[in-house]
Image (cartoon, rainbow, N blue to C red):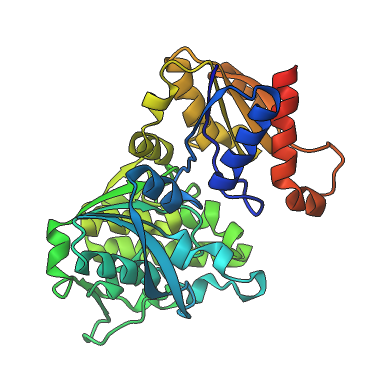
Amino acid sequence: MKIVLAPDSFKENMTALEAVQAMKHGVHDVYPDAETVMVPMSDGGEGFVDAVTAAWGAGLVTASTVDALGRPIRAAYGLDGDRAVMDVASCAGLELIDPADRDVLRSNTAGLGLLIKDAVGRGARTIVLGIGGSATNDAGLGMLTALGARLLDDVGEPVAPYPDQFGRIAAIDLAGLLPELARTRFQVACDVTNPLTGPAGATAVFGPQKGVAPESVPVLDRALAHVARVSGHEPEAAVPGAGAAGGLGFALRVFLGAVLEPGVELVAHAVGLADAVAGADLVLTGEGSVDAQTLAGKTPAGVARLAAGAGVPCVVFAGRIKDGAENLLEHGVRELVKVGPPDEPLAQALRHGQENLRRAVGDYLRR
């Protein structure tokens, strides 16, 4: 029996690597001789670097950078010859900022620019980038300035790359961008299709998750619209994915020529998931929570779709199964399995995540 284990991380509970190990133990509790193929996954957020680096057999590089508030930190990315893999979550991620300190108006993506600069300096000419889990809403201008661009007001004075200053920007000067960027290819794992602005844009949809107060949403939305106008790329603001990571998708595509791809598909290709699934008897996947949005590019849906194409049944494990998750049963998922007792308090569930997942897998296979 061949069983492929391809979970994403279970947010605030276990990484994809930890989840895949728990699943492996659960399988072997019931079928000690089963062949288990471990393929930790990600859709571009947490765990993205670990999943791709492991698949490449690459090493990790640690570099000096800053978090979304500009505080010095160290962050890791994968480097394999002339290609690198990194993510926003490691440098401008929401989980790096305590809830009490989150302030979108004073946050930016400069940390990502510093990581890109470090990788390019080490010879990387292909950068695979995951942009899930950001704490920012700066249209990627922090990243651009860290790479050498300048934001100028109407008299040519510099403007700081923070959303509360965007109204002062009269020009975006790209003359100082690192010349190597023109020879660098960017592949971006993007699991959202939102435009930059408007009711479905970066601020309206994702701002509240980052601490943006309701009254600040229209203010920030106008700030991003202003950036699009000043940049001369206003039509591109409507392109699906431009609103990803607080508008970082817009900057990557417009200024760095990035290709935005569905995150789970990019990772599946990088880790060789199709080859792993070929000839399998069963595929197990999962993440912390599944709901109606899971079909919109999240890992369980992507894994199930690939498994269905190979004629292999797929089971999804999740700590929380919310309304709308049942739609997955019409898209290649055989069964949704709740991880942990239904009445277990959240704090306890987080402490016992790996144990609960192992037990859930074993119980499912016994049935």
